Image (cartoon, rainbow, N blue to C red; front, top):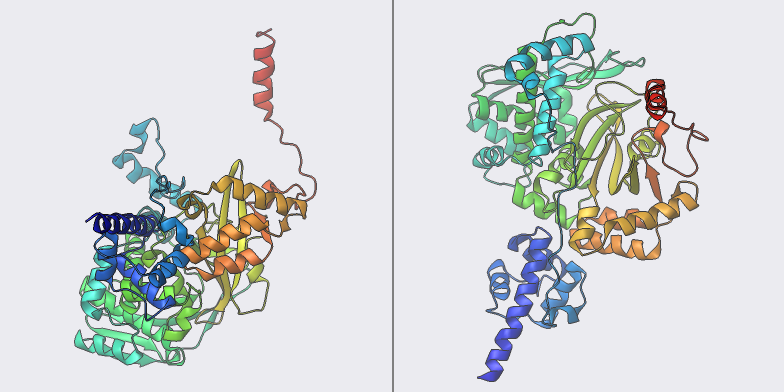
Amino acid sequence: MGLRQGLGRKAHFVGTKIKSLRKRNHLTLEDLSVRCIQLDAEAGPSVSYLSMIENGKRTPSERLLNIIADIFQKDLTWFYDESLDDEAMDPAPVSSAVSGLPLEPGFLFSESLLQIAIPELLAQTGTTGRQFAHLLIRAHQESNRNRFPDLERAAESVGAKRFPMTVEDVFDIAASLGLKIQWFDRSPFKDKGETDKPLNTIVRSFFDAPDKIYLNRSLQDTPARLKFDLANHIAHKVLHDGDGARAPQISGGRVSGRRHDSDSSNVDAKDILFAWRDFECSYFAAALLAPKTPFRQFLAKHAYAINSGDKVELTKTLVMRRMPSVSPYPFWHYFDAYPPGNLRAVYRGNGIPLPWGNMSMISDPCQHWAVFRMLNTRSNQPSAQISVLRSGDDKRLYCCESIRSKDAAGNPHVLCAGIDLAPALKAQNIEPMETIEAIEKSCNDNGGSGPIPETARGQLESIGKILNIGWVAQGAEKDATIICPRSSGCPRDKHCLGKPNPKLKPQIDQIRESVLSSGGN
């Protein structure tokens, strides 16, 4: 009897520890089962068997325990000592993207005053209703961590979670919804837009109510884009009954540009509606082509490589935007950058400060961001980077993977997906600031970019294995770099723009302090 009680106690502690690790790292039972099977197909457990282990009803074999130890980067002996780690902290980082700011006096932000003031503000700043809507939509995405279950369920009801889908599969879905396809031929044309250099622009597709989809024949050359455009219009049929209130799908040109002289000076409600429907249909299309559970497993199998979609005819843009929606780890960001400095897409689920604004250009962007470096290369291979981001007294630690690509009109741009490493370090009871400062010191000792110290590199490699994101370890092998939102505020010991000018207080403040110090005389 005593032996059985001892075995039961042992199973209980092992199961409790495994469950704690799994939940701390935001994994479902299915996620952990899949990870185990990827490492050892023969010993990998089923979901039900894992559940019994966690509840103390089964004791894992040493072979299985070794697999789990490798996934969570623990020594085997840790599972057998009858002590539990202190509950690891896993707070969301402070984020201007997802947190509110108390505003006083509050009456100035009443609905009636905002309805009067916002159109005037947009008109005076040359901001279109479409741009303003995109800013609101981005805030909506970030506050929801880019996860919208209703749209996911709508897509799954149509696609039945099939993955991967062929072009023929998507055409079959369109036909089942009564949609008709019409092809047209149009080549790219030049549109100067907001830059001195004209951009190639192409109309890829558009919807004609109530049931016709027009597709540019050039899409046939790129099945990944063809599937996405078709899925995008399927979304319009499912979500809006194909009422036709949609903008054409375009690559290049002035899609998110500032207002031009020929544009209306008034806020156009139709532009705001189109912007919202662009978001809804785009999200639906991604969920249709990359349903959450199978795509999550696919990304895990390929260690979240940003170009992994090439294997299943999915665009890199779709893969990048889908990562934060399906990953167990919630602290993601992504950028889609066009030269010389225009962000066509931004997601800051972890509140990363922007390298430059997408409402206007700036003249002094920090050139050490991965997106800027990749804009100036000709390589089409993905590149990982570990970065210490300094913004005033705030210090962050990021890893990203960037890749240079071309849109459907042939314009070069850079896609970048990244994660905030601090919450992952905290989840393993590692103090992030110590790691950040060790890496920052190495960077400053080497002029702004330098090798990651051995202890910190080991921590990052371990985090990469736990998260199953391959480019974290790849980034840790390279020199880390210090980045900042603006070059004029460079925090490096060796300032990028030479010796920084001392910050002088405004003359008004100097007068005020002088008067106060003299007692008003």
